[in-house]
Length: 165
Image (cartoon, helix red, strand yellow):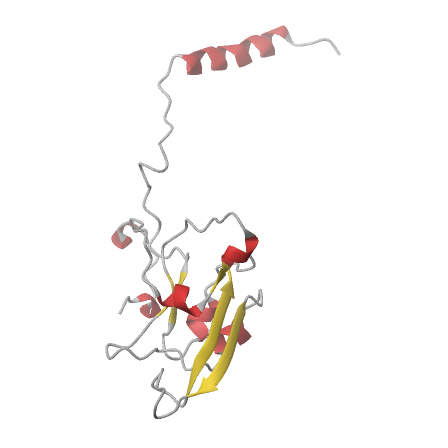
């Protein structure tokens, strides 16, 4: 089959038209596009207003996780060491973000709203071991702020369990 010279010229015409247009590339680190309101990113553990952790170490989030990336080891609260409001607390709480699929099942399964998925999506690390977030890392406030798009522009409402409190 012989080459199609007319088809090649049409292809080159598209290329030549694009050469003289300004690029529409947006510079990523300086300009961050807002994420959708229901975007699921970095996990976060929460505390009550009195400083006690909301997580009671029930491991329902680990049971609900399809990727098996959550590890919870519970321990008993004592009178001298009160960590959570319940009888137990999560002595070890780890999430392996290299295995996480950000489905949000852990957030839905938690009866105490102790874990939520925020909007931070810049989670890259140089080492694989740094992708394992410990309890202290999950309790900390995220350093980076990600702009969130206006929820009224979209037809999907923000679920009741996503209220930041």
